[in-house]
Length: 297
Image (cartoon, rainbow, N blue to C red; front, side):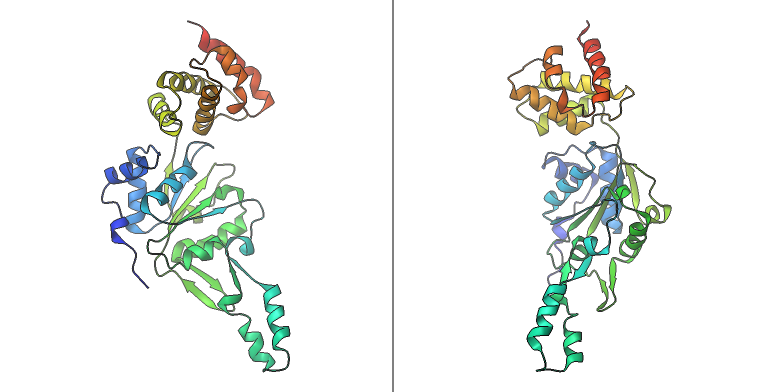
């Protein structure tokens, strides 16, 4: 098997910033530093922050910049080993046993059906048992949506880059993936899991960075329109909303206005397209007030 390509490893924090920027992700130096350290010491990186601040997009851009495969595991309540790591292809195993019948030793047949060819590889096993030229980026997305039992299962993987399969033994990564976990803090992740990771909090960007993100992600939006939308969105974040709009909503809002031919974020235009950023009925009234306040000289 070929060794991973060393050329794919960025040499500095500035190189990380440039690499992500080439794939339309504006990365600050603190995040770039966390990524570089994670790569150099081969440790998972846990990115936490409010929804919509770009945690998942950071992993996507990093994989694209490295020329690596992105393997994404979307977590949810009740996720288990079969959906996350592997399961046996029972239908194929039964078919194999029936086809063999009495022609061969039954015990040997039952051993054969627990071979790798009968294994359904899910994201975790795919990432650990990889044969990629450049090790993949394993994105464990929204880990806080899973339960504590699943977190406990991840401990072996994050500590040793290994998965134990009773019928086959322990499979260890020859070239460990770069692991990125994300969380929206819907619940507190256990300390045992955090100890196995580097940690970085991604906050909402300041106004200038948010305008720059809009211009990069939505080049059809003018600088003036992007700035006006970012200003309104940042005002909304200061309110007691049920769901605060993230950077993704800022981009969507600006795109919605541009798609309708608006060159100015007037109060009327903002109200018409408010659904791009406000996703709960309870928040609409407060958003109306913020829009009206923004329109005052």
